[in-house]
Length: 222
Image (cartoon, rainbow, N blue to C red; front, side, top):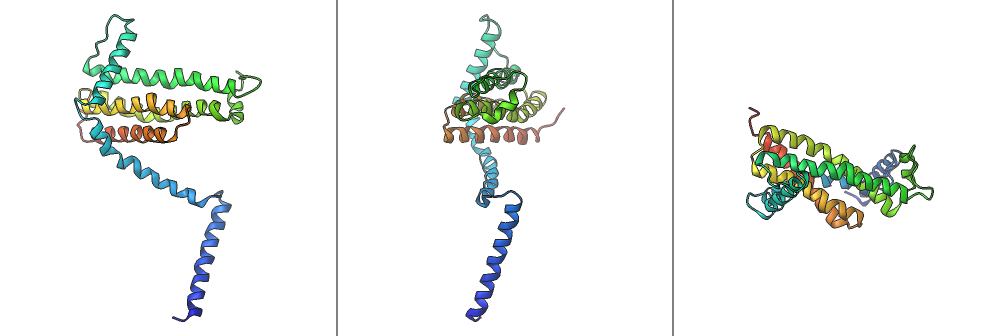
C-alpha cells in the first residue's frame, strides 16, 4: 500500500471521527469521554461477591446489624425491651432506613434550602429554590434525594425477603449492609464532601440489594 493510500485511509477515519463527534455535540454531548462512565455499571456486579463475603454469618457485619436492630427495638419500646426476633430484623432495619430517608435527611434537605437562600425557604415553592443551592446546602438536598432513589430497590428486595426468606441470616445481613452503608457511611460522606467513601458506600449498598435479589430468585415462593 502506497503512502498516498494510507493518507486517504487516515483522512477517512479522521473524517468519520469528526462526524461522530459533531453528531454527539448536536445531541448535547460536550464531553465525549464522559460516556465512558457508563462502564462503571459493571462495578456493581463485580462487587456482588464482596458483599457475599462481608455478609457471612457470625461475622462483624452481623454483630453490627444485631446491635442496630436491638437499639431500634430499645427506642421503639421506650427502653423496656431490646430483643428482636429473627423474623423482625428486616422490619427493624426498614424502620431505620425509613426514618433516615424521609424524616432525618428530609429535614436536612429542607434546612439546606433554607440555608442556601438569602430570603430563607419558601414553603409554597421550595423546589423552585433548589437551583440556587451550592456547597453544603446542595449536598444536603442531593443526599436526601439519593436516599429516596435508592429506597425503592431496598424496599422491593426487603419485602420479597420477608415473604420468602425472613430467617435467612445472609439475606438479612445483605439488607443490613445496604442500610448501614447508606445511613452511616454514604450520607455523612456526602455531607462532608468525601468522595471515595461515598462512592464505596454506594457500590456496596447497590451490590448488596442485587445480591439479595439474585439469592431470592433461587428460592421457592411457597
